[in-house]
Length: 619
Image (tube, rainbow, N blue to C red; front, side, top):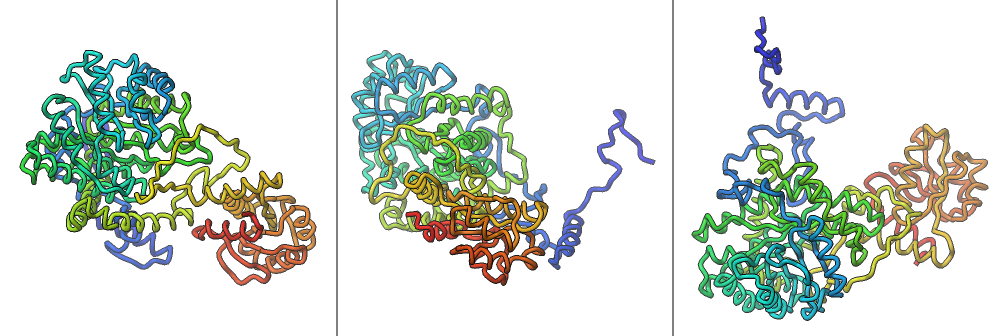
């Protein structure tokens, strides 16, 4: 007889604990029904997925995947957070990015942000980066309480002038050196990655010495991993590059006389946060663990509490259907905050289109506010801690990143690896593999490669200068291949008054053709090709007239495999007789008379759509 506890809730206590092998046995039975005869660990591996960096996502995680060495928040190895209290005191810092060149407009935007939840400012300064001129920095920060609002600079080659001007403003407005907060943003290796120019660490080290001596709350150097992310690098490559950069800066600063603790205190690390929330969480945690290891090896284990600034990924931002970017940045912000980032920048949803407007900036800053104030994500220290999946992912990502870091060090360090092209080659290989997944829609882009809206009204913004410098790492975007196709369609629309079209020849009743007709319509619209599905159903006798009325020379058959076997050949023949230059069939490749090509899940959509536009003469 089962004895229930006093509260009457047994919590399944009468059942024995299942063993991992029992679960594997059940998996074997399911796979056997699907034609896969595997057993034991092989059954589990059959349900696993290999993602970037060779990481494997498994179907089941158990206590065997726990991380016994994760430590406690605020203590080495800092996996669970750089501070014992995490973000519970007031949430993570909300840092808004500003790249407006007009000082007056920038001031207006800055004050609006600070009055509505932003806690620190990230300013692009200097003509080369399209930011506010150094001479306009005073006007841009008029009315800003510099002792309350930390300022982070991104001045590139104009570091000396921008840093000097900021310190002058501190003195002019009565901000004591002890009250100054933020980061001067010196990052010569990051600048070298973006521009291809040889890095010079002299000025960065000089500012680090001054900050360590006079401005103890102001960091001099930023270890910006964004150039590697924006060049198509993986999470491990981004982390490995940041480690190599940080180590190079430590060497330079300690060689100039700073202690390891003082040198570590001069660094702020910047990482990309993507819509893959679990990978982002693991990235932030792994980054802290890895830097803690570097500090430990350098003899200062307690100095390894990495200061992190997370930025929502520009690579994931789309130009078409940009409203969906709000959803992407929300997931990215959640991942960064839960992962323990000290400050988070949510890029406005129109970031890829140009200078953001007031509405876009408002949504960006409110994203963090909702997650902190309404979703209460900051009330728990390391909310992902103890998740066997996250712990395992953190561990595997850290191992992969450490391997890439060691490869860079063997190449002579970050500067040498950039100069030799080793980093560029590795990032390019990663991006090439990812481009194949994007082209085949194995990595879907909502609103672009999936569920595009051809009739959407374009969102227009004031253009900003290109950030791509000759000789530097490239800047990639997930939507670039599909954007090129859509641009061809737009040009055709402007020249002719209508988009290129494809006729969908649906065979049989709706129940037979709807799934593949929807698939085909979605696929062709991703290239800006308008599907014509009128009439709803055709046969050999009606297909020719319907095709002639569609105003195109391309057709696609849509139906079930059974109806293809019965009717595909004769309908394809009717379409060719009516003038079809190319007949596609939505489904796996087969042997149907009159069918030229097949479109199916997993095919190279970009190649198909490009060839269709070529055949139509859409330049």
